[in-house]
Length: 200
Image (cartoon, rainbow, N blue to C red; front, side, top):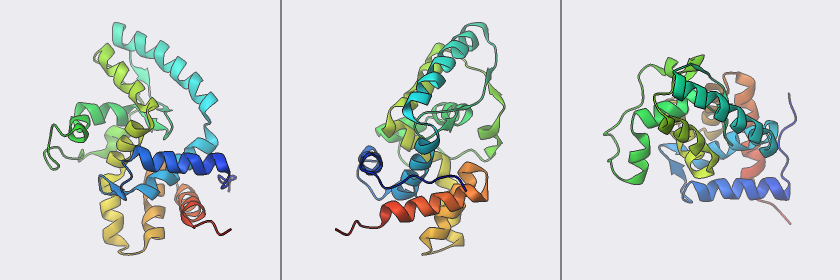
């Protein structure tokens, strides 16, 4: 198994910043914030900030070509939570950003029934505005909200399947997000590492 994020001072600050980015709430869109934090810690371990600068540069170049000339943009993951381009676009195209700002009430917009939309090999940008929306995940608060929305249906199912068993719920969410059972195990171990109080 790959090396897990350690509880260093820098990682502890990132864990706390993620909590603040979620409005210091226990849950966001039905997902426990500590679960979202675990995903963030894993993705930050394997895609540090300096690496993401290259991702944004490549997205700008291919996104401009896609938006202006209608060319498909190859799908990859970006941002601190490594969200897929189709996921980010679907979040905006279904108006989920308005739900967070309070313009819509919960329940007015639903999660896509066909989750295959999250796994498209390429996307077509309809405008330069959509390219701008892709860059919104640079902000940790937006990235965490999109991640919570992406995992909301899986979180509900995990809670039904494993009531009161937080570690198994996290394992199911990690497997859903990462696409592998090993990712779910890693997310569970990170959660245990960072949720345990420090004893001095």
